[in-house]
Amino acid sequence: MSEEDYTPDWSENKKWTEFDWEMAMRQSDKFASKYFQLLDRYGDLPGSDDIILKQMGGITSPLMEENDFYIEFDIDDLQEIEDDDGETFEGGFFYENTPVYMLLRQVAIGWCNIYATFLMPEHRKYGVNILFHLGRSMAHIAGSLGDGQYENVASNLASGKRAADQVNKAIGLVEQLNQYRPAYKKVTEAINKHLREIHSKIVDHLILLRSKQK
Image (tube, rainbow, N blue to C red; front, top):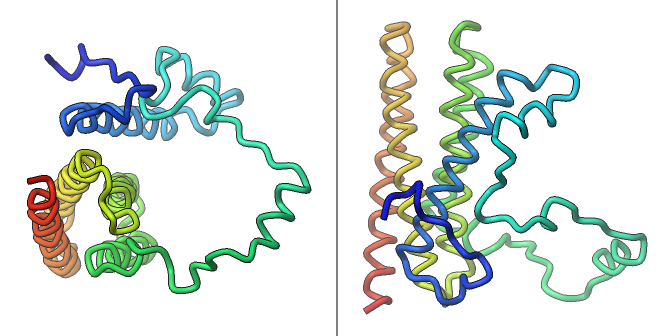
């Protein structure tokens, strides 16, 4: 079955296999990429949301339910959250304290600095594409790591593989920057060194998940 022919049934996600999760996440990445491209093209126009939705063919992300687009809190809800005596997460969530996530986050911040101070204006759109893939990889690795309990290994594995794929895409784009301006090599070599280290850590994480699956 091809990716285009596959329609994930989110209501049955508790029964999903690793294949189901990965196909849904592939479609989610594809959706996000297309939306990102259209946002760059039409984002400054009046009524851009309607224009983009029309260009998307009216489709929504396969990992989102219709009601997920509209989340409302009233005053009591907000107060309850502020007054909650439960876990404070002062030390951060589990995934935020893992070496792979911390390094990926550091690289993403570093790339933001490079984008702002080093890239030529005509190359910044290209730089945003790299940042897009770094952002997607952070989202996927966070989903794969979760709270460290790995209660749904199939989902954790699919997220981890998507994170690795997004890191690979970022590596390829960073390497291509040298074709636009040789001076970029000073920063691209350092960034890709860290990205390859991140990819290696993700592979180690996937091996760990495979062992838990068995």
